[in-house]
Length: 260
Image (cartoon, rainbow, N blue to C red):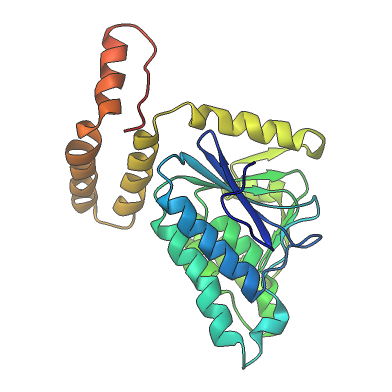
């Protein structure tokens, strides 16, 4: 990985279309205000990079993706700044252009789980723990309260948020929250194998498909179809890669993507 800029609490770099953003505060990768500020800076850099096809978010080490937001930053003198920095991450993730995959190598608790579920896909190590324990401190997780009921049956989301109990990556896969669970012994190799097919695809097709899914979500069918139709006809079909893909199919050859 070649860093685009130097950070103290995260690692960020782009190699062959794959951007990797790793929280670097082992062993538990707790998110304090300075770390969240660096995450926001890296996300801004990623969004501006026209070479990025895919963004991976992970944590350094094998104990934690992230154990959540620093409890000390919830005090009255810091909570406004903390919420601004923390929610800034999710506002950025929501408007990112490229698909985002959370690679959960250990516990993802509290704000760490919120960060994972804000990504488009989650791959996790066997036995990794997820949970939203905030209710046990007499608070609730705002981002999870918004997102989780859209990712699973609302009653199941209620159980997770109201009960505050942890669940495993295997249970998360059964709920449809986690895409893949890989053995810890082969985790890094399995993750790379999972990512590889996406990186072979056209960048504009990946970005257009994510945009279509996101912008259609929650709309009535006809409005959603109108939105997707506009993206398809006025954006994607005007690109070099859409023309190349169709030509390659008709000419029975492999496409050569320009990513434009």
